[in-house]
Every structure is written in structure tokens, then in C-alpha cells.
Image (tube, rainbow, N blue to C red; front, side, top):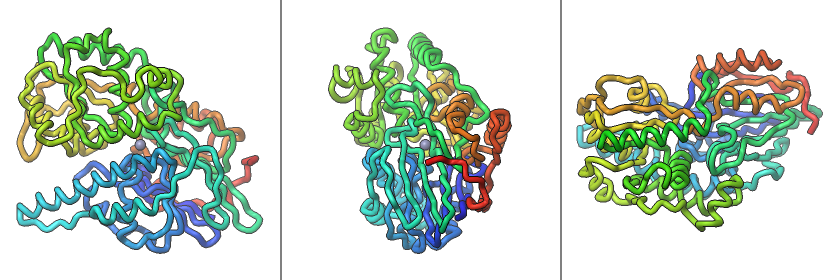
Length: 465
Ligand SMILES: [Zn+2]
């Protein structure tokens, strides 16, 4: 009965953990590594296990750093089930098909420069992967393998995101593991709060913002309103690199909510991402997980938030047309870390203009363009071209899909008996800062590292269910 850390140990991306119970192997997530020059090469490395020998996969949510290498796992021989929440199962096809298209485009671009790069996987691999997905409702136990029972709970991070409860039995020994997945902030728009657990023998917990406190929700909304007012006075555009899933829908929701107050009639709002448009439709068609405020809003308006000046840019011609808009455009475009996608074109056209504003609304991994903007680099490279950063860059931590240090501690504090906790999905300083705080809260907290293996049978049995 062993748990081994493979990905997202000592870093944020590439989530993947291996659980071995009674001779069976189960994966928690199989995510893509993002950011850094070596990320493409690292994604291609052999897995530290035989893909065909894995018996089951449980996927916490649809972000690419959690699901992005599933098609590679399938390409390398995995034929078993991929269990995940129902709404997540609706979102995963959007992300994986996009990921395969990006891989193909990168490989074609390389070929034009005389380089041969085989795509990590192709659309056929993705379609095979999608056929292996088994949707699960929240809050219902399910036996996955002999000796393994699982239940997914709402993690409040993005639609369909789960924390995973996992009961493992070997002979007389029974242990309960809780894997947090990515945890949302409390009291965010649209989604419900992360589920409160009461018992576990071992907790595997994310630590993305383990060393930071986000600004309060109301202050954040006020700050965003202030940025839009300033941008209007400056007469430029506003660019928001946003994750297609989660942030984009939350931004649209906030813009609809404050439409009159923020004088948004004077702006044109572009949602420039086919993936974000598709994801928005999935969001509004899954209202059963909404919080009260959003449920009320949806009842009044049926469907997408009412934003009369919203332009959905589906085609690349639609996207290119935005390049001619010099002022009054609020452009929400992927990718969220500006390491690819349509937002690059908008940054190329607007970064050198001091009257323009860039609003960063999510986590930016080291090595990404988004991180360089957050770090206020005077100059960056986009598509091989040097671009000076003269636009004003704002970081709105309060809009993050991830809980901050207080949220993470609040989540852990609901466990009775203070189970030991291993921290994943955080850069080392962030995970270490959270470990210090967790120890003050009575936990034995360890920062995980790749290859670290824990024998669950050696842990005291604390859980009561
Ligand atoms: Zn996530």
C-alpha cells in the first residue's frame, strides 16, 4: 500500500501521483508540465511505470496540468478507465483536442525550420482517451479496483473540479487518503466552496499559493473596476490572458454583474478563444453546482451572463480583426500564462503602448511570458520578436482559481485528528511556507519530491469512515 510522487512535486505543473494497493496501480492525474525551456522534453520522458500496467486513473479536474498527458498515457498503451466528475468529463474534450492541435501546429512550425518534432500525441490519441473516460457524480462512493473505493467531492476550483477520497484495503489493513486536487478560494463567484472533509489517514494537498494571501474579493472587484476606469482615461486597450476554463467565465460574470457601475457600455468585450467560448457553454449548462448568487442570476437570464457588448471571436479572422482596435477593447484571450495562443498577438500589438493595460488573473509558472510580465521585465520575446513592455501590468491575485494560505489552512483545519500532510503542486518556497503554518496548526507536514514513496500501512489509522 504505497503512494509515490511523480509530477507536481516541488513544482506546480505536471500533476501525477501513483497509488499501489494489493498489486494494483492507480494514477491520480496525468498532467502536462508547463513553463521552462525543458518542459517539452520533460513531457516526452518515459513514465516511471509501464503505461499498459496501470489499472485505473482518477482525474481531479480538466486543467491541462492535470489531464494533459492522459493521451500520451493512452498512446503508450493504457487501455483502462479514467474516472472523473461528470462536468469535468464535459470539459476535458475541449482541452485535450486543443492540446493535440497545438502539438500539431508546433510540429508543423518546427518542420518549416527544418526540425523534426513528432507531436506529443494527435487527435486520434485524444479520441481514444475520451472513450476511456467514466463520468462519476459527486458525493457517491464507487469501488474502482479490488481494495480501492473512491468518492469525488467538489473542490470549488473550476467547474467539475474534485478532491478525491480514496479508501485502500490490503488484507486487514485499511487506510483513507484524501487528495485535495486544486482547491478554490472560498466565497468565489459561480462555484460552491471547497468540500469540508472530516477524516483521513493521509492528506495530499496542493500548495500553489501556500506563501501568499490574496486580496479580499470586494477589494479585488473594486481594483478591477479601477483599472478599467484608468484604462478608459488612458485611451488604450486592456488585455487579460485568461485560462479558458474558470477565469474566463468568472470574468464575464463579474463584467455582467458590474456592467452599469463600471460604465462597460463604452467598452467592447472580446472573448477571443474558441476553447473559452466552448467552456463557457459547458459552464452555463451545468447549473447544479452553482452557488446561490449565480443560480439566481441564471434564473433571471437563462444562459450566459447578459453582456450586450460581448463579442465571441471564434475564427482566426475574428481574432485578427481585433488588432485594428486601438482603444476601448477589453480582450480576454488564452493562454492563461501567455505561453501560446491568441493572446500573444494581442500582447505584440499592445505591450509597447503605455496607454494599454495588461491584467494578470491567474498563476504564472516560471519561464512563461506571463511570469516575465508579472516580474516587470523591460523587454520580452514574442514569436521571436523583441517587444518592449511599456503597457501597465496589474496582478489581480484575488481572482485566482486557487485558495491562498488562509484558504488552504481553513481547508486542512476541518480534518479531525490532524492527519499527516504531504504538500504537492507548489514551488518549493510556497510549499515550505505552508508546511511551517500547517505545523503551527498541529500537522506533521512534509514537502514532497519526485520519487518519494510513502508506505500507507506504516501510518497510524486515524480515519473513522
Ligand atoms: Zn487547476
